[in-house]
Length: 352
Image 1 (tube, rainbow, N blue to C red):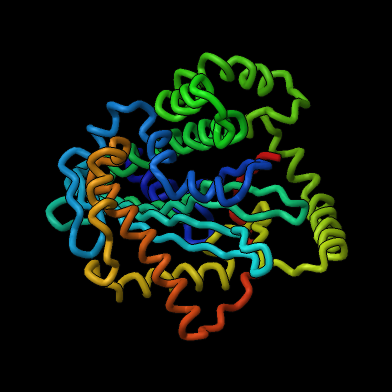
Image 2: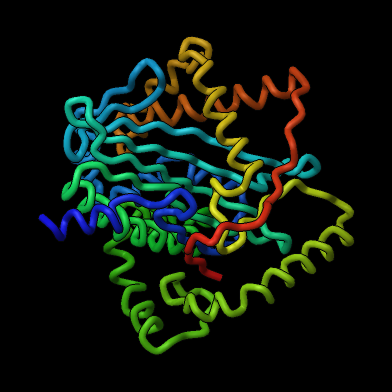
């Protein structure tokens, strides 16, 4: 009992300034394609590890009147809320920042067991590549030892999800040109764990043990200490590349660059944008969204990875995001450029 209490005090919840976890990787894929991946069912297929896990995770899930998911929790009931935010280059209309914020709150008899927020998204770098992040904003545990176990499970699971997502996006996604390639692409999503064990596990494990300079290595093989030593130099290079791109293109795209120690919630403009989006979404009723019957029917055919309730919540959140964009344009609401201030000292991990 004493050990559990000590663990709860020292590790049971994250502090306000540090994320629960922060994993990143670099890709050269089209940002709009990556946004569709994180805004669609592909991410959920990887998140669930194996297809049959969906039925366990989302059994008895219900789509409520506010556009959220009420599912079986661990223990009790779990409410899932999501909001999509993005920023686009006004000239090219290409996405420069995308964020999917999901909140998971578990309750039992009206008492909160644990509460967690995860941000999935990416920012476009000055050289045209994009940096993808999987960042848990916080984890609050209120019911040891259950919440302690859940925190450990989510931490381990998060490393798997970003590992699988990185390999899928960089090696299989958005490139299928024939039936055989489409099969491989689908398998890399639905059975990512089996394919990773077959194709990448031993190479990545070897690289972690003895090192590797391969550009395609998993983020898990990177030496975090070496990256921290080079952080200042890399940031100077990023600024220089940004100036070069600006001079060549004469464009000033509104972009976000999250430094290695920067969290989504620590960037004032970025956090304000997400908070504003959440507040706006609460003012929009489901009747206003006018979700088509075709979209409703699609949850029964394409929502296998989600379950109907999660699929409907995703459609609802995406439709609210589109409604936001239209209303802002029609009312001439000025949206401030998203800029990055000084980063926090929270720990994170990044792949280059």
